[in-house]
Amino acid sequence: MYNCYNFWRSEDEKLQKPTEKQLNRALEISERIIEADVFHVTLTGGEPFLFGKNLEQIIKLYRESNVGIRINSNITLANDEICDILMEYNVGVLSSIISHDEDQFNKTTQNKVSFKRFVKGAQLLSNKGIYLSANMVVNKSTLDSVYDTGKFAYELGFKGFNATRISPSNNGMIQNYDSLILNNKDIVILLDQLMELKSDFGMQVGTLNALPYCAVDDINKYGSIFNRSCVAGLTSAGVASNGDLRACQHFDITYGNIFERPLLEIWAEIPIWKKQYHNDTCTGCAYDFKCGGGCKENAYKINKDMAGEDNLKKDTIKNNKKTKISSFDPVNSVQLKRDLKIRDESFGSTLFKDPSAYAYLDNFTTFYIKEKYPIRVLNRNDLVFIGSDIGVDNQYVSALFATLINNNLGRDGG
Ligand SMILES: C[S@@+](CC[C@H](N)C(=O)[O-])C[C@H]1O[C@@H](n2cnc3c(N)ncnc32)[C@H](O)[C@@H]1O
Ligand code: SF4
Ligand code: SF4
Image 1 (cartoon, rainbow, N blue to C red):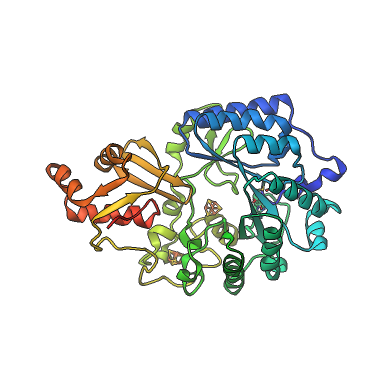
Image 2: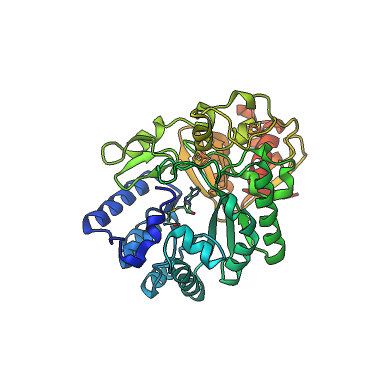
């Protein structure tokens, strides 16, 4: 599925529009995802814009059920009809971008007109005010052009820019990744260019694949970039077009088919990869729980072992400097962010802001937040008073406040 440069080849009409059967299957998959009470969906592929005006049927289903939605596209097929749908339902687009350089762009996509089509698509979407962010998959040969490509995206109207190290894809299209994969020196060059884009143009910058937290000397230089970690089996899953449920979108390991069994039943059987495939050399690291060793796909491709080392892993880290507050800080109240979603779970609930800001709550906190959410303020004394019968004390509240603040779900309310 990844590295599908076929999906840039609309020039010679190699691409087929989805058939009615394929559209119906996409709609059925969407219904099953909605039934499972999922917070957020990314339509990817393949190329979602191939659905043309039928995209509306899919998007409408999610929007009507209050499920967040975003589309990954190469945007070369953008037209007025698609723009109108995206505008009406307020759907943002994450577009692949290859390079600011026309030759490099067209060579990579093996399509002489892909750059021009990309620019036309970007102008169309941006003029209509659709939120655009870009993802540049970076390999050794494009490493030096991250800043220029981000600047180019900014000038085209992109608000966000991600530079993601190339994953050693398992689709067999590229046999040897040795000359493409980034090393620790390269990743610093990539991240420094991202930070420059942020400071020069105020762009939202990021990287879409988990990086080991020890890949660089100081993660605090890179804002929220190191908030990510492997989400496989934890918060995210991918559904292939035939209904197969995968823990990781890059990897075709499947755990069952949602047309044969309920999605939630299969989901319950997917292990949390960063736990299941724990790399023993991470034991004792201050970030072991959060980072969990980087990307398991990378580890597999490099070592033929999912529990092996990510190629960017260096040494364990002694002190955890990343958290905004520790559970010893005397915060008296927390003001929760607006528009949080809460979903009941067997252990309590999940509190969700966006795919990078969420927390798991126990039954007591769930009850309290549900009661208090309209005013959005959690008060220490109040929590201790109400929860004293079941053992809620100052230590419990401090840990809860640290979780909410460090996970960007709230701020110190004084
Ligand atoms: C496979 S594409 C499919 C959606 C759409 N056709 C597009 O080009 O954005 C989904 C995302 O995967 C990223 N991607 C593709 N190949 C990759 C690779 N080898 N490593 C990391 N990310 C990759 C793309 O940049 C894009 O953001
Ligand atoms: S293995 Fe984990 S970190 Fe790597 S791509 Fe898959 S979900 Fe992301
Ligand atoms: S030692 Fe392991 S857990 Fe610690 S930062 Fe490095 S990869 Fe992550």
